[in-house]
Image 1 (cartoon, rainbow, N blue to C red):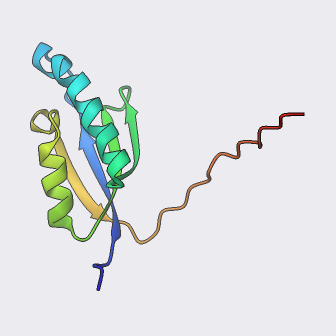
Image 2 (tube, one colour):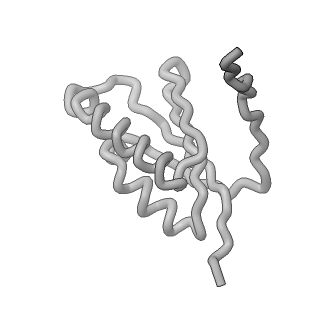
Length: 102
């Protein structure tokens, strides 16, 4: 029987001063985030440099699984984070019109 899947939001606090080490790891972070999207682990990812915040919604069996994925991200060691289970998460999918050959 498949394990239940839940949604978790991770609220990251980004350092106010970004070091060169942090900046050099951004491409690796983006690559891993893209892999998480492709693998169905990550549902959304949002950044506000102005607020110094990063939010990510993961789909996982439990919080331990989310922690493993979060701690594997290259930039996590530079940030504080909090994981919360979501009761629900609604979103609207962009409607893309069908392509017509006429």
